[in-house]
Amino acid sequence: MYRLIYKSRSNSKIGWSSVNKIIESSEAYNKDSNITGVLLATETHFLQVIEGDFDEVNRLFMRIARDPRHDEIQIISFGCVDGRLFGGWAMHGIGIFDFNAELIRDLVSQYGEEEGSVRFPVQDWRVLGLINDLRVI
Ligand SMILES: Cc1cc2nc3c(=O)[nH]c(=O)nc-3n(C[C@H](O)[C@H](O)[C@H](O)COP(=O)(O)O)c2cc1C
Image (tube, rainbow, N blue to C red; front, side):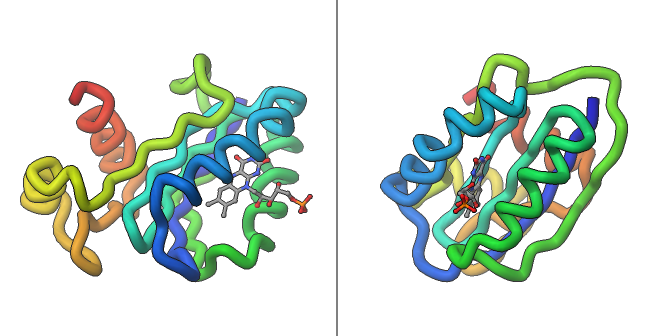
């Protein structure tokens, strides 16, 4: 089992419609490929965790990296792991947008600010901490 985490910058303002579009179009592919994970989005950035077999994670990441909807892709980590953290989700979307002003303030105080929202961290342990913070809300 392998896990890859990357951060990228969107080429247009992200909202729920763009997140949902990605999630909906990912479902069949991820299920067929036995991929699970989570996709976080602010209005400007994506952060995604992809889990699965070595070949499948590589194949999907190469597709995603070619997607013109984002660039400035930075791999945060890629490695062999004991098991899945997101086994229940083909791809779970979490949007951190305007209407969550109080939540964004809390996250910014903890993780820092980037372009008006929470700065997605570039250390894998902090990414997992952020996802954990979001899941308990
Ligand atoms: C931020 C982001 C995350 C994505 N995540 C996935 C994903 O988990 N699974 C998936 O099949 N496609 C995902 N996509 C879509 C792929 O990049 C691509 O559009 C899709 O796989 C179709 O590829 P194709 O046009 O080469 O057939 C994502 C796109 C973006 C911008």
